[in-house]
Length: 180
Picture 1 (cartoon, rainbow, N blue to C red):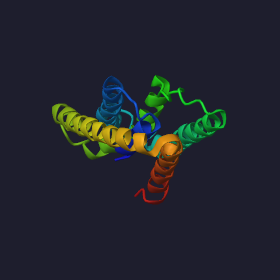
Picture 2 (picture 1 turned 60 degrees about the horizontal axis):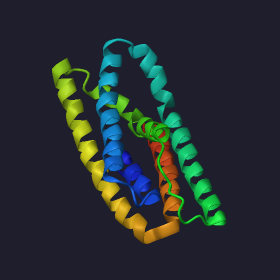
Picture 3 (picture 1 turned 180 degrees about the vertical axis):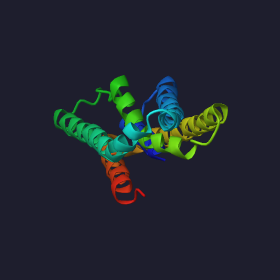
Picture 4 (picture 1 turned 135 degrees about the horizontal axis):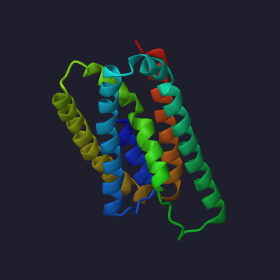
């Protein structure tokens, strides 16, 4: 759902987004959601001690990345409003997209713990299902965001930035206060 929300925010920020960009965004989120549980599975089977220490900072990493991206999005939107460049398109850079993919899927490393008893083939199949569902959900979020972004207009980037910051805070709170 985090990837869905960020997809929605990305499309709000860029209402004229091309279908190829939508596929790229959904693909990146799907790939990260596919890969992270497998990395978690591998960690359980190889370097559990390191990962258990790393697990404590996952919420902090997600918070910092999403606060940075969301704040940057809001500031750029406000600057754009001051200059009033109507022809200026907000385009999501690939590096920002990768950061979003990491931030929204880093907690999926923990899913590797839950599938630790699975065989490698079952873990890969489970991760493929997670990745495919994420891809579909993100495409849906992008379609909704693109439609809504064209109606919201110039405030769409600000709303998208606020959504990103909110998701970062949510991941942080869940990871710090509700982690078992």
